[in-house]
Image (cartoon, rainbow over all chains, first blue to last red; front, top):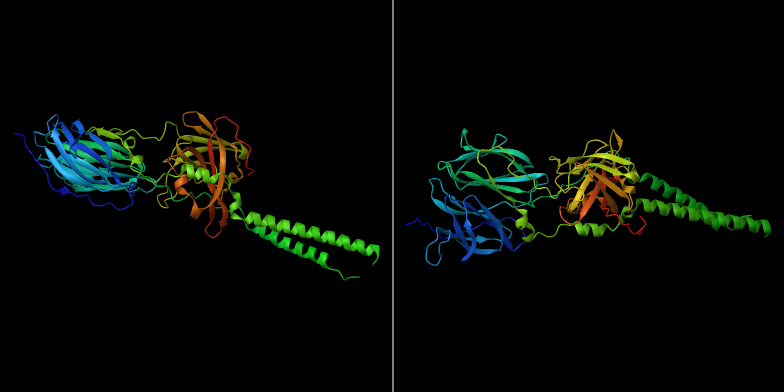
Length: 266
Length: 246
């Protein structure tokens, strides 16, 4: 009999600050990430088949959904939901404006579970990109390095973090925590301005199925705060000449008025 | 009263009236020069409206905006293709016949200290805001250059505020191609009121936006109080209507 893990109880998403790209929206977005090796599944949302034959290592979405509560059930592919139990199930609140990752993944030790993570979709500063790292693999604590400098240290299974950096290409490494010689992942990532690149580490290192899948939220960019393009004051409307013209004009008008109005001379 | 006296009086009156007219004209011209709003031309509001990003909606972040990539483990490579906003190459040159401008264009980003657009620190080059679209792609492609630079004199965009509706602008691209644009509007914005969301918009019609400084100059801060912005659109070959006198 296959292992059955049913997660009941709502996984409530924290309300995001109202700075997100969807802040005023009554809809949220969801991506679904499959991080359990060797298991092809069908995903049901509120009882409807939403993703069919969903395979390990794939990211589906984003699905744009009205804000609300969603029931998620994951069945082995082609299972009949009316006559069998889900492999994983859970329920989540999706607030308007939120961007959520729903990930079926392995805990450390190899037990499958279902997690919901709210991603940071607030605007990035002009020129910046955001990288989010999520440790969802059957593996111990890791360090995450960008250009060989530690960005996140001691990240354990189920944890994640994000950081904003100047948009550029970075070498990203994932190593065992405190052990730079055990490299699980090493690649150059081009972090584009105004995006959040979410890297989900999934699978099992021991089982040889470890991989990192990425998903990018775009449209988070901000405009620069100005355009500084002059420091010498050679151009533009100098106020000096017009003021001289006004003064001279007043004198001329006064003289003219005197000529016109003087009457009783010789 | 003698005739000479009447003649003299009449001449004086005519001269006096002339002086009044000349004086008033001089005052009016000076007042016009000082009036801040007189430098805008063309339908600035229409350009701003077309470029202004729409209110965020869920739809605007729909599926086409998201890329999904599987990264091979332990492999060093470019994991993602850069998502250029369009298939238009980066600009490398700018020609504006009316101003005698023929300048190199280089990509610039953001000055991390100030949050402002980074611009060339010389008077000869033009900076392209590399995070926005290339000229001709959807949205506002920003080319910025100095009006002047202390110690160096007038800049390549010194006379930008003399460009008029219908004037031609040519952009040269990295791939050897070039595109023609026509000026449709010019505006002078107080720096505090610069519509940054319009000027740096990444959606809407393809607009080439030329930016420099102008307006009043604060000698204490060595800073202009305004930005001169010229909006141009791809020249599709047709004659622009000879309309609004700039």
